[in-house]
Length: 428
Image 1 (cartoon, rainbow, N blue to C red):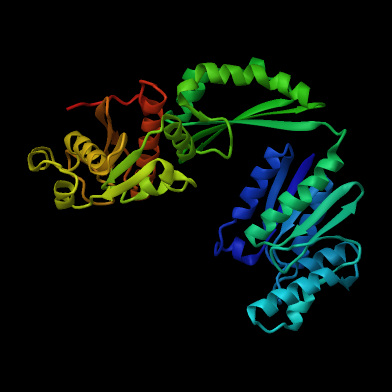
Image 2 (cartoon, one colour; image 1 turned 180 degrees about the vertical axis):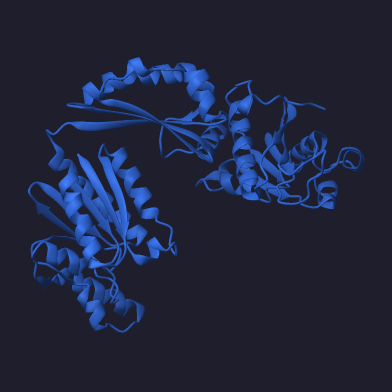
């Protein structure tokens, strides 16, 4: 099944709001075996909405529209869609009662505009929205499905997962499948992964299979996909490719799920070892510990962090020696290792990571330019540091430092001796 995504709103076009809905819908549909044909964004303009809908119906079997279902005058999606399908708006009593209860509970006045949200096209199937005030609407035309959803992200997501996908899967039976498998990798560049590690595997693909390299801040996502008549056929076609990637790129793979990130993987590894972790941060200013604690339940293994931005804090709290600071400077392997060692001792953890560097945009010197970062690692068996030479962009430097530090830890927890990007370890 092919899908067409239409996101609606002037605020999306001018950049007031980042269009996260389109990204989430595309990912969710792909993971459900639905091929996204096209994504478009249009303003609150009936002509543009109608033209996009017309194109969508000519190119796909499933069209998802989001946005423009609110109670204000600029929310015109419902009218545009109703006119296109020749609908008459009628009152949907369950939605009206639901909206009235919401306003009553909040002690807010119920207005004519709010009443209008309970009016729905008479030829649409209503997708009851228990998470908000604008119901979803589903139309069927010549075997195609058009679903119109609110633009509020949590409402849209719930309606797709709970209401739409079960209906789509029922419709798709007997129509073949589109199956996708993901690999999440870190610590290697895209060209190196493609040319030197995985190599040219074009002869492993038939005409219904494809592979895409998707670089991002956390590393690279490899997506391999296959169209097939049955799930068993798709599995048989994908398996040789999956095994080749596992064999050639094993040290870089941290997950085979689009939903399981590097921080989650590290949490699972620490739990399996009944081990604990702490961090000491200078240039990342708490960003590293923030990524670690993004994972629910991270208190099982993460004890805490020390943000030692000032050298006095490095000395007084972490026990970094005055001699190391004076002889080598705060941005050095000596200080990085002493920071990791110090926080592990202070918080009593089995593992520790540290970061110290010149994130930018200022502060660099000829000897230590902007982008010079040291990451420290400490465990009961080993302590080391690695040096990064990154960019002149502050946020990129901080983000990449966090990812490389976490990948360093992942490798050590898995007994992988190599380091991210084949960096060389340095010891005291």
